[in-house]
Image 1 (cartoon, rainbow, N blue to C red):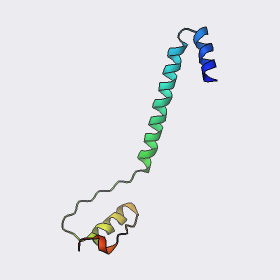
Image 2: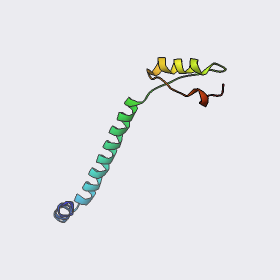
Image 3: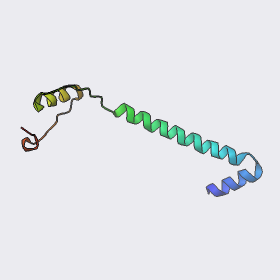
Image 4: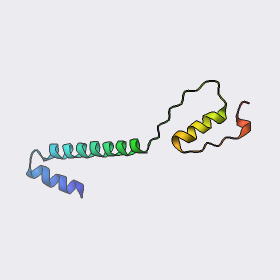
Length: 79
C-alpha cells in the first residue's frame, strides 16, 4: 500500500519523494527523542563514595538513596 501511495505522490508532485524522506526522518528523530526522555525519567541516580567500610553500610546507603533493598549471599562476599 505504501508503494502505491508513494508512486502516486511522486508521479503527481516532483518534490514529493524528498518530502516523504524528510517526514520519515522527522518521525525517526521524534521517536528517538521520546524514547530517550522516557528512559531518562526512569533512571535512578546513586552517588556513593566510600572507602574501607563494611558492605552492610554500603547496602544501607543504597537502600536509603534508591529505596531498593540489595540482597547478597554471605558466601559471595570476601569477609
